[in-house]
Image (tube, rainbow, N blue to C red; front, side):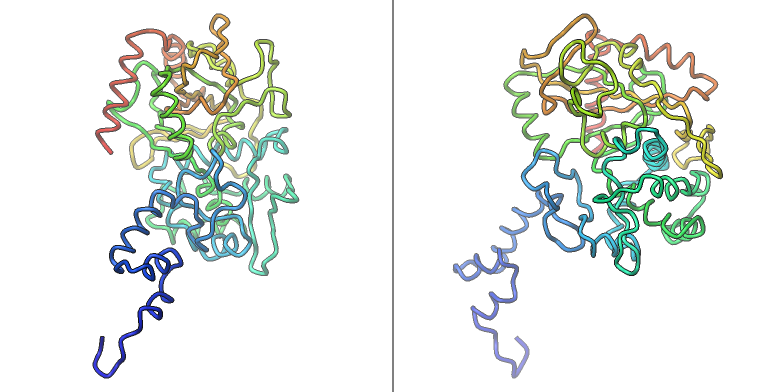
Length: 395
């Protein structure tokens, strides 16, 4: 304590602490011991709390679809602060660590917003709050035409990659439209999946394409439940294909059993569940594009090669997306030829994401090479294991 200043009493010191620390401190434990106990309990659960208000996220605490990383919650004040002031945006820009990840997220959300099925697949719907505290885009009363208008004004990847800092990027967004900056931040921050653009020997060479991503879309709780089940039953890999516009929701909610719901695109002749296949060719058949992007002023639809990591940009009208998933081998998987159906979607987690561009000059060669991949092939299984080990070593 400073001279002539009374040292606060034990009770007074307790009032200065977080409730968790206060309880432990008044119980006779030292401040450092209390702080250690608090951090030890809190850090593994940071994804459950809003980075702005520090309250738990609305409506998801305790579920298996909790965010995978710290993010801003859907409360109006936090959404306004994030949209207008950028409060909490550090985690959003941290996620967008490479041009390819940003490009992928923008292309997927644009596809969802411009799809004829946008009312079903633009989920979650953007939440944007203006300076008056009014919701311009409101998930409770979604206006899909308004969302499409804002999203169509997003800057091109060429403009984004040319910026040197966040301020330059925010300026470019502001020039494109009043709410563009907010929707750009929302697209990046609302993606709860862990996405990393892969290069070199951390790619699966057998898949051909250079557009490969490590993709973990399950929350820590779901991954823990998956690991527990894996220790009991074991696991294997299979492919899952879906049109590009569907990945806006998949990246944020994981692969789901949509059989019998409004989200079901194909028949369920093999029963309800998540449809996968050991054959990449079979799953790529489900990746057909269900929309056509035709937005004035947009640069989607071209193949460029000026990203900072040296990879091409992903944008394009006929982009095909394929995921390599890990599945719990609990004996309840219905296998009919090359079609495998998993009824329990909690037993399916994504590991890799592959993107194929029909506009690319080597598309036919790349697509044919990937189509020959089969997860029951021991050589391909060995390649998956080797690449996953190399990725683990790099973390």
